[in-house]
Image (tube, rainbow, N blue to C red):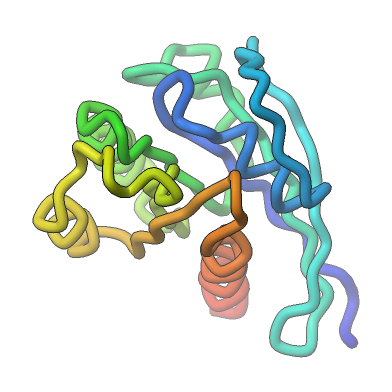
Amino acid sequence: MNSERKFKVCMLGNFGVGKTSLVARLVRNTFSERYLTTVGVKVDSKSMALNGESVTLVLWDIEGADDLTKLQRTYLRGSRGLFLVADGLRSKTLEVAQSLLSDLRSTEPGLAAVLAINKVDRLEKWQVTTEQVRSAAKNVPVYRTSALDATDVEAAFHDLARQMLDRSDK
């Protein structure tokens, strides 16, 4: 393997969409039913092998918001990727995630990004429609994830890591 590559990734989305739970599932392979609000930012990391390289994702789990405050924008400095999260049970959170992506791509067009629509384990209660998912996928790779049962969590993070690797080699 070549030397380790590190990429800063910011986790963005509304309150309660599952950002912290997705990080816990990826990093520690755990899930907790207890909801703890992230205040400010919580940093974690996950190393993985990808395309023959050792890649470490430094995950900045930023507190939920409808739009980015000045402080949250400072957390984004040095980011190479965005991991946007929406809650399938609340369609408004998908609109917020898409708005955040649009906002950030206008100032940082080179950022890699994926969108996780979380809580697919409760698909029968989803407010997010198939058409909304299709529409979102025109702008960013979309994954239907579950932090509870780990559905597509690793796949979404691996996709983002691949995008960052590809962009760093150019």
